[in-house]
Image 1 (cartoon, one colour):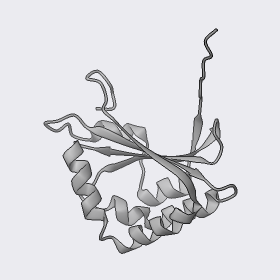
Image 2 (spheres, rainbow, N blue to C red; image 1 turned 90 degrees about the horizontal axis):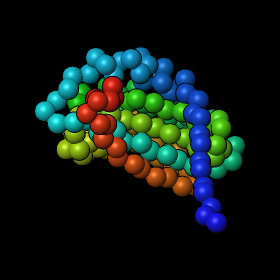
Image 3 (cartoon, one colour; image 1 turned 30 degrees about the vertical axis):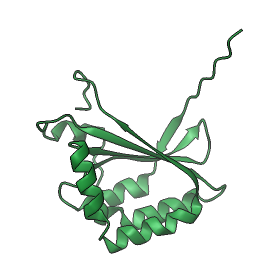
Length: 143
């Protein structure tokens, strides 16, 4: 008999972080221009130490406005924590116009004092992290 593992997760938006970033919801993605190449999405997941989600989101909220103000450095799509599934998991999703744009964006934000400081403040709270890069299909509304 084969064993089947299925994982499900429901994420609740981190409203303070999203508000500081000027997030306008998923419908704002429709206004983004389509470039010569397909966009990519970077999905970052962090598993946090128990009881540290408030500190994590406060630290991130402190630098997210600066990070989102950099031109051509990606678009924040979502920040939230898992409410059903693996608890203490945070997801952060960024949209980039291409893989090259992602590389350039990461280089640009390394010099942002507030952003870098806020990310340093989150580091001790993170037990595990992972990054996935996904590309939408040709018929996806996430183009």
